[in-house]
Image (cartoon, rainbow, N blue to C red):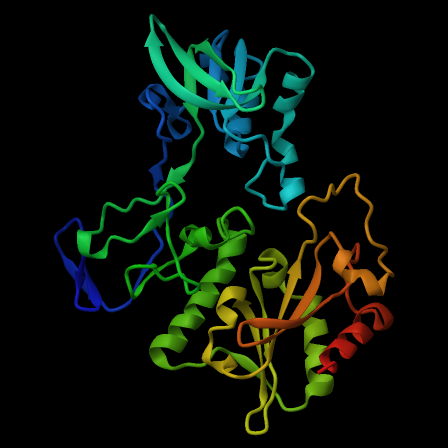
Amino acid sequence: MERRGDGFVLRDSQGISYGCKWLVIATGLSQPYLPDIPGIEWAEHYANVSTDPSGFLDQRVLIIVKGNSAFETANNLLEHAAVVHLASRHSVTFAWDTHHIGDLRSVNNDFLDTYLLKAQNATLEATIQRIERVDDEYEVSIKYHRARNSTASYRYDRIIACTGFRFANKIFDDQCQPEMMIDDRLPALTSCWESTNVSNMYFAGTLMQSRDYKKTSSAFIHGFRYNIRALHRILEQRNYGRAWPSIKVTSWFPDVLSIIIRRLNGSSGMWLQYGFIGDLVIEPSDTKPGRYLEDVPVDYAHSTELCADRPHYVVTLEYGRSDFDPLRGDRVSHTDVEHGAESTALHPVIRRYQDEDMIDELHLVENLEAVWCDEKLHVEPLRRFLTRE
């Protein structure tokens, strides 16, 4: 692939060339990723390892990193391998704490019982310094993080790298090589999912995840499908002058109030891309009606020309404190209207902006069944907020 003016020329395996002005790349993460560890070539990438656990009978196995794929692999080996260790620089991160489904799911954490209940398996918070072949085994030198930086070495029969995949960027020539980030695994993107250094080059699918990496769901189809729809609307607006679909707001009340309540109780985009995808509400002016735009990327919302010099609101669903223990912490009462900002579960947040400066915000109190239509608890606080200015 090469740059040609402000467009691109692509050449396929048959030598046929294709030209375009705007390019959308949706090739996924197709290349195995291996971390920069001396001796990592001795490790097997988990994409190539047999799922038949009998091949690991009585073997000592090291699995690199501690994501869902690592725990799935470890669980598969438990009844056959002699010892299984999982090692990475960071402690296990649970999805129930972070609300990110890429972190460890409870369905995959059986291995932890075999460690904490003394079945001689273990998770190691350590940096792997090097891997060496010694006789018929692999000697792995590590530096512990939670044991005063002490060092140790262990021997294994097999090493499996459950280290994921990366974007294969070798198809580009030097003139259109996109900038990379996160250990050169993902393209660096603007708020429009455009390459930060190659104009008119956009990315779709799981390649969109660098903007909300390990925060929401852009790595997965149930998340990036909303991103793709937003990208489609951005490209139509940028390149064909087609406005983002919107609802015309001629009367601030009851129109906006009823639309927001309806959307909070029915939007799948805000629900699955919490805090990342939201609705944009543009106040009417003396010469222009207001507009209600659905499922707009939050960090793109302020940059749309529709918002120029006009106050606007961004409506999202968001979790509360990141340090909250969802199984043990005290929650705010679902009837405590005045302390909605202390909600820790997913709850509505409405913010008012002038340009990109937030000038007011409202948190509606959380609800166990995610229903926000009670007149006293939800509708009236929102009505007061919308009329505050």
